[in-house]
Image (cartoon, rainbow, N blue to C red; front, top):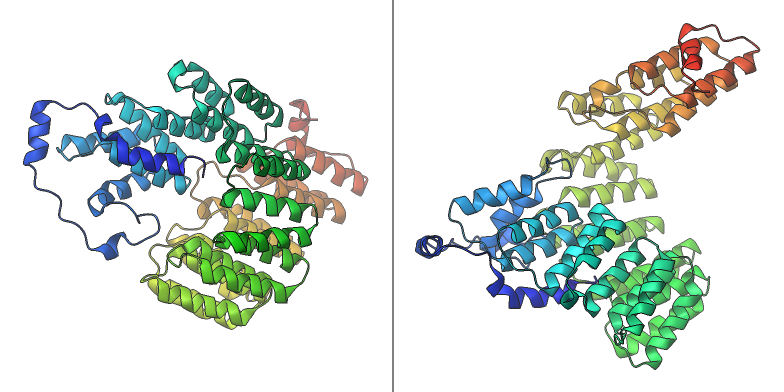
Amino acid sequence: MLLRAATAGAVRRCTSLAPARSAHELAQAQAQPRPRPRPQAQVAGPELRSLEPSWVPLYVRLSKLGSGRPPGSVAAELDAWVSKRRPISVVHIVAYVRKLRKFKKDACALELMDWMEARGAELGLIHHTLRLDLISKVHGIQAAEEYFWSLPDMFKSKKTYACLLNCYSAHGMEDQGLELYEKMKALNFVPDTLMYNSLMALYQKAGQPEKILTTFEEMRESGIMADKFTYFTLIESYIIMNDLDAAEKVLEELQDVAPVHWSLYTLMANSYIKLEQFGKAEAALKKAEKVMDRAELRSWHSLLSLYACSGNSTELKRIWESLRLAFKKCLNRSYRVMLQALSTVDDFDCLQQIFQEWQSSHEYYDMRIANVMIKAYLDKGMIDEAEAIRQSAMAQGHCNENTVQIFAEFYLDKSNVEAALEILRDAKNMVTAHNWVPSKELVSRFLKYYEESENVDGVESFCEDLKKLECLDGKAYEGSMRTYMAAQLEPTHPLLSALKMTGFT
């Protein structure tokens, strides 16, 4: 993305930026034996690839600190690592930041950079650029703006300006982005690929694909080299404007001058599928398969999903077998994509087979995978089988809010509101999050059912359930009133009277 190439340069250059350490610490670190490299098979996963084997243990510990971690847990982990005289440098930190950022673990990556500065490292241009991008993602665009304008003038370069422009693009802030772009031109920054890509992304977010075309022409006339992102955005703009012929022409021209990234072919395939041009879609997917990096899971998952959307069960199964041969261990997310794909093509026998295979070999229990199977069973009317999965998952503490949603919606579709209510009442035992409440859409479905059936007793009981779940609000009150009006009755339940007194109306 925006900073990938720049960060790679930083990894090569910034050894001198390592956190300050005492002579004693340095002597101790040098006296420590070098960590024995781990076998390559242990670092072959997509998230660990490109890291030195000796760097992997700390990265694994950091990457496991999820979004629900307490503040400061990243710093605590790093402090514990350093306290044991284990070596770490800015090279390590930047490599970790790049990896975490790639896998959307932005908050963890930002804490790493904060820790690095707190330990005495002097931040260079590349570090400020990385940090600016992360602040925008974690704390929002206003925090990113404040950080940018607080930088010393020596760091307000084309790179940091371009990064802020990219932040505006990501947040869809067209006016601010264009204003910044004009300022960049006034500062005589020579436009490059990065700046043009950010500008095109800005127009894309603003829903102005026609301006992407003019920007591309300006870019070409200026002799600026386009990259994968440029062509992806250009082709996507043609697709948005329903000019598939022009998109095909751009792709054909690109094929003649440069290697085509697999994502461009899958982008075209998705467009063909929407138009039910399945022959063209399959041809595009075959080209994607030919050029993709077979060690990149995302490409395999895209092929699985798109073959499923095109209804091509034969190719779907072939890709699955190829994926299994390409990786020593099949990860949960691959099983999840495949099971969803099989649900799309309605291959129920294969769905059951692969789910059973996952149950016997999974790396950890993923309720999202179980939910796919639960829904498939319910769609087939196999309630006992779906309930068996739910009960087993509950016993292990794995059910989540989607489990509640799937069962409740199924029973409501069957007009079995009592069974749907039982699921809702059991939700506190199913969902581990202490502050769980049913979705607004689910509550609305219950209220609509009671209104249409003029079931006053039912809506009163439902409101009592909502009160127990601590989510009784004005919408529930309004829905209850509509039920009373439909039944031509006056509200008499004390709970509703209390709601009225609180001013929910």
